[in-house]
Amino acid sequence: MSLVEYAAILGAGILAGIINVVAGAGTLITFPTLLALGVPPVVGNVSNTVGLVPASVTGAFGYRRELRGQWRAVAVMAAFSAVGGIIGGILLLALPATSFSFIVPFLLVIAAVMAAVQPRVARYVRRNAAAHEQADDSTRAVAFGLILGVLATGVYGGYFGAAQGVVLLALLGILWSTDMNRANGAKNVLAGTANVVSAIIFISSGTVDWRIAVLVGIGSAIGGLIGARIGRRLPAPVLRAILVIVALTAAVILFIG
Image (cartoon, rainbow, N blue to C red; front, top):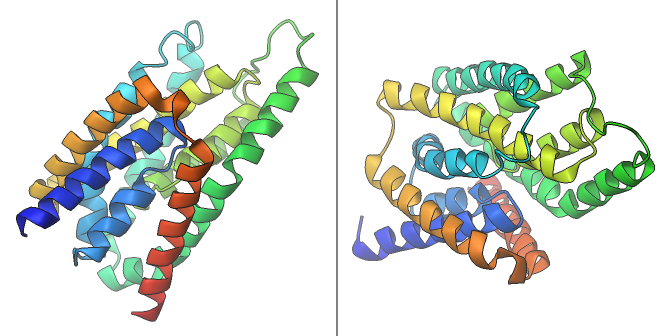
């Protein structure tokens, strides 16, 4: 790769880190960038997943206060998210690369739709919270349906993962806690868990391009710090529109190719 391509990957990582704080789904920036640079889809996906691990860990750590008193429930859900992440990671490596190349355009379209509807999901959760504001506790026990949902999103996260957090936030906000901050904190832990376990599998397989992983990791860490400081001042709708456009453009290119 040239220095320009290295710079492009680093820049995409920074933008992804900012977007993950502001709107979520930063993978919709880094992954299409890697594809545009000619990186094979599977190599790009596994390297991107490994590169985003530091951002996943710091994102989960940042919401530790909101999850005070709920760590037992979160740990149970995280265990199922980890199982899903392992399954998804194994599927990515076990299935032929052509299978991933075939399915990833559809996953990009799904991820774009998830990113687009994220504001509606958030509004629904807030309305649900308002309807239960008289309740003694806005957080329910972990139900079987929620466990299945977390497991399924873990599989998706291990296999591809873009916009996984949007689905998790909807599940947690509707089936677990109407407290948006608490649901968002648990979302970060669960998505981060699936990311970490699948990254371990990818590292063990030897399929990671460490140049890409390191650049994405450094960029996302920088972007996360920037987003944490100025995220509230950035135009989230504009960033979300960028996500949707990038994902759909990448999907069209892959469909045509």
